[in-house]
Image (cartoon, rainbow, N blue to C red):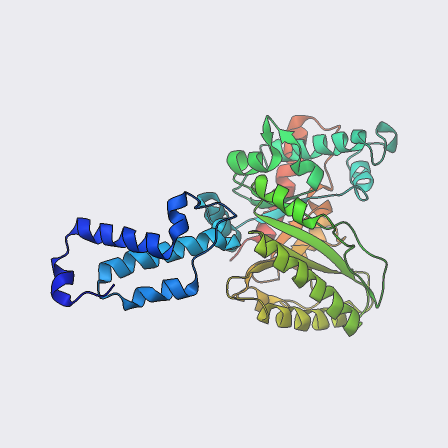
Length: 381
């Protein structure tokens, strides 16, 4: 494959291209089979790509190195997802002002959300299609409102049933991004296990792989999974954090960005102590992530101002977001506004004053005020 300097300098552009093509087909014969992008094709070996350095011809080296990077991207789950939309979403997730709208009430929490919205338990059958029809109508009104746009709403976290449905003829996730420029996320956990060692870890997720495939098919950018800490038990917190990172790595391998949510119970008398232990365990978990592995963190508003600030500029953290955790909106906003670099990911605090009985004008006015207050509390100075 080597050529002396005189011969290399004499090669015409067409000969260079032919030379490169022949070498590519030699190193990566499957390229000739039209299998690029096929999940069954095999990536080029590192040994093959390392052979590029043996070439004297710099132009051919450049072309083949580019081909190696392309083949890497096909077989790297994260790089494979880095299409224009994903790249734009990732950039917005890292840097844009705004907050996440948590619209992910699942089956267990849906009745409470509907009662807050003014819907009686008698208007549906809990756990049945009628309940999901009503909650989807509620979420549709929130998402299609003129107040709900990507100018202030950075992303929206969806429940699986919401992802499976449509808004104005488009899948919910497609509508969010194409019509609103709001990044779609998906709640993937199946609820909480019984308390043990002061924590509630996530229940098993036996169909996780199938759910992640469906999420990818729906253009979901990232996922969220919640567990809860109730006491300052270091062993329990370690087990909970380990589970969050273990599942998070599976999300990353599937080509999405995970939101790790180890919630601290705001009513716990040990809340401040829990947050000290939790921060230490999360930092240790971040250090174990690989070169291309990044996460988002969703944490309870801390007892000590800027307790989690170290995560804001951490190279493995895409964004640090806060859950309201049961605080009323005004109180949650006040605490959040004191946390440098932390943005909101509110659910009840976002929708607390909304009601199905409001006229569209009344609804949009109240909703706009809610969104603006949370946006201002999240906005970077």
